[in-house]
Each structure stands twice: as C-alpha cells, then as structure tokens.
Length: 248
Image (cartoon, rainbow, N blue to C red; front, side, top):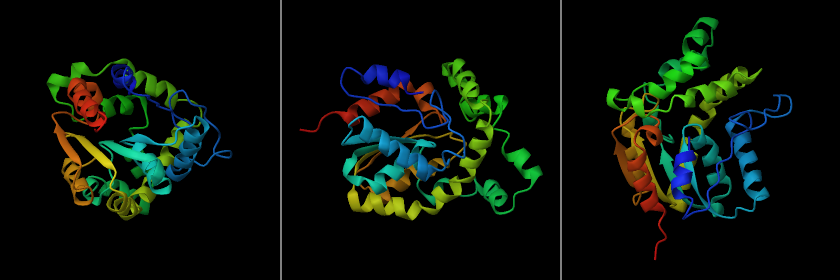
C-alpha cells in the first residue's frame, strides 16, 4: 500500500515500511510462539526500530497500524518526531454506533454473529474492504492486484484465525483511547490527520477530534474512502510531502 508513496518521497527521506508478524511478506509465527495482540506487535515493532538503528522518526498511523504505532508512541515518546494519521482512530467518536454490532459480539459471541460479522475475513471480504465507500468515479484508481495480494497472505494456514483474534483484541485498543489522548496532550507531537469522508470503518467526524488534544494539528478531509493512498494519491502525496518538509 505504501509502495507508491515511498517511491515518490524516496529522493528526500529515509523510509521504512515493515510488515507486521503474520502480515504481508512477514514470517507467520504460530500463536504458541507469538501473541497476536496490538501491544505485542507494537513491542515487536519497537525491537525492529532498535535492530535497524532508528532513534527518532515520524510514524504513520493507518488502520491496524494505528493501534500498533500508538503503542510505540506511549512507551517510547522520545522516538516520535511527528505522526501522520490516515484513518487511524484514537477517539470514541470514531467508533460510536458504527462498531456497536461488533462490540455486542465481543460481549456475547455466538457462531451466528461471528459468521455475519467476520465475512470480511474472506476473499470476497478483502475485495469489499478496498471498494466499500469509494465513490464510483474513483473505483478505477484501485489497483486490482491489491486485494489479491492481501488474500494470498491471509489464506496461509492459521492466518484467518489470527486475524480474528487480533480483531477481537481491538476492544483493548478502544479501552486505551484515554491513554493515547493523554500522550497527545502531554507530548504534542507534530501531526497531520488525513481522512476519507466516505470511510465505512470509522466515522469521519472523528478527524476533528484530534484538534482537541493537538491544537496545532493539520486536519484534511479527503473526497475518498479508507484507502486514499490508492484513490487520491496525488492529493495525499502533496499533503504529506509538505508536512514532512524540514522546518527552518
């Protein structure tokens, strides 16, 4: 997903995009060897930064990368120069109502609810995630190989079960919203918030919530959905490129 962005910025910045354990081209340790929680993955990513010698950096918080990245922020604030938020939620307003059905399942899981709610953990579900909420005139901007590559990774033996467990761990991320907000207020990292106004996974109104704790943050509402790096690339590239310019 970040390939085009990294290509466009590679003449100016040092860019790193690791796959999380069990994702993309990363190894997939068994659940007996590795606990698939956002806290554990966050600790693993911190070890990764240490292994390659990253002492400070701007961090990109998107989707699952938000709960992972925020673990680095709260445990290692000295490393964080700034944050780029793209549809990465840290406020109750982002999940209000839209996640109620999922929360009800977590509180009282049944096989019937699981089948209904976890349809996105399938080949068709992955395709839907890329197209949901995307305005018709932008659908052609989504590269058709993206859901295929995602599904190739996800269909590895045991991966669907891992994805299910990690999604259930999202309730622990939600419980930490006040902790993340306190980090914002205390450390005031430079921040830019980019949101697709048709995002079906998080309420778009939440983008403005970042201003409560980060009053100097840039907030941009994009005419797109969850994957604005695909559908609105040039606009997002311009925003991020400007945000990352060295400040004199």
